[in-house]
Every structure is written in C-alpha cells, then in structure tokens.
Image (cartoon, rainbow, N blue to C red; front, side, top):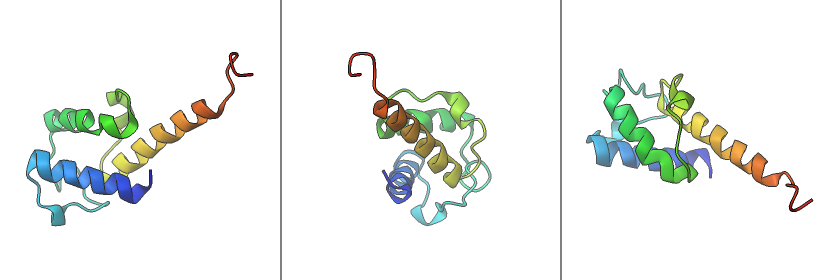
Length: 94
C-alpha cells in the first residue's frame, strides 16, 4: 500500500468520522492542534485504521504520532513488519 493510498483512506476516515473538512487534512496537519482530534477521537481513529493493516493496532505504536504523516509512517512500519515476517521461512516451510 502506498503512502498516497494510506493518506486517501485516512483523510476519508477523518472527514466521515470526525466531520473535518477534506481541505484541512494534509500530511503536515497536526492531529490535535489543526484537526482537533482528542484522545478519545484518537482511539476511534485507531479502530477505524485496523482494516488497513488487517490486525488489531496497539495504541503504543501511535504514542509519538503528532501529524497525519506520522500516522502514515506508523502504518507503513506495521505493514512492512508484517511483510518481513511473512517473507521469512517457518519450520513448516523450510
């Protein structure tokens, strides 16, 4: 999944779930300061992002997230970690 695809999904979630105008959402938008996302909203956002990575997201992975780009980077990190795990041979396949 590309950064642009993640951004598009993330913007759609922010618009649909939190009634944020699409033009306010950029990669540099600060979640708390610019988009008024509070801690309760952040939990809702994590729940909405789960389908992008196909597994439960740990809130710890998002503690350092401040901007929309940070969210994209965190999701890409999770997706890459899953891809690396999937590429390694297991005892059953080795």
